[in-house]
Length: 160
Image 1 (cartoon, rainbow, N blue to C red):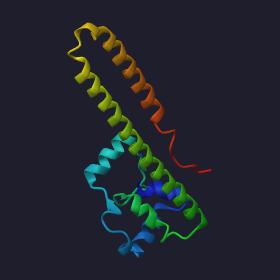
Image 2: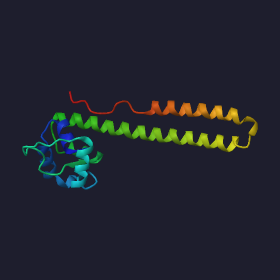
Image 3: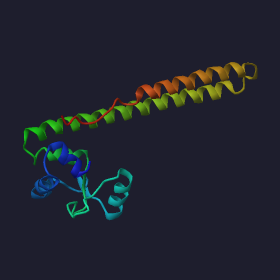
Image 4: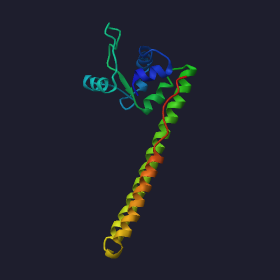
């Protein structure tokens, strides 16, 4: 997550968030936090339409990006009640995303195995090829239905 996005969630200025991190920099190794390169930042600005102030009120430094571990570590350097609550929400979201990814991967693997089974066991049965095609069609419909159901509900953070 970008430092500016986290700062909005925690209701602090980006500068204040980054200062707290820099005062505790030993808690943030490279796999917890890193700084975007110029190319990465420009690409991000183009894709997400990040706007900078034309009067010089924009960023002076390239943004920092925090990994899941870095976000967790932020709770040790930001001590407000808001930071604690937002951190809990962020960690819960990471857990839900991980669970969804695992579930989705398992379903895809099981469906792939089922497809392989049908292909192997039905390809030599010339008499029932039309019936096999109908069964496979139903399987593909079920796959579509399952993948729609396994998409996560809207995941995000409430800032109210």
